[in-house]
Amino acid sequence: MTRTMFKSLIGFFAVVNLVFLLIPAAPLAYAENLAAKADQTPVRSGPGENHRTLYLAGQYYPFKLIKRSGEWVNVVDFEGEKGWVHQAAVDTTETVIVRINLANIRLGPGTDYPVVFTCRRGATYKILGKEGIWINVLHKDGDMGWISRNMVWGLGR
Image (cartoon, rainbow, N blue to C red):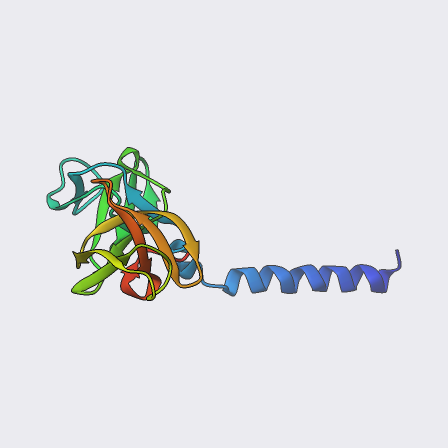
């Protein structure tokens, strides 16, 4: 390897390292989606049981991960509320939450299918499948159907 080639390689690696140092890490922190595994999952003001409970999340309640601290995860929900949840209380099950006041759940993926039931803002569902803009969902009580992705929060996987 010639001296010129060696200098070029060193310059190249210096530029690559500089680029990685300048790329902000914050947008990547929201890349992971989590969901409450059970009803009554406490969302706390800090990482530990000694911190105040902000609210109790129901089964399938979706969160976006902000960061991890030991056995605790800092999360944000569909309303922008931030809190801490014990890592054992969440998993990576694909879930969504209804973000509009009233949503139709249909028999199939499209408006030409009949409405099976309606649900209110805050209803949570496990994702069973996706077809275009439609999501096949399951409620914890066993109700199933299809909802438009425009009506929910929690996707991005």
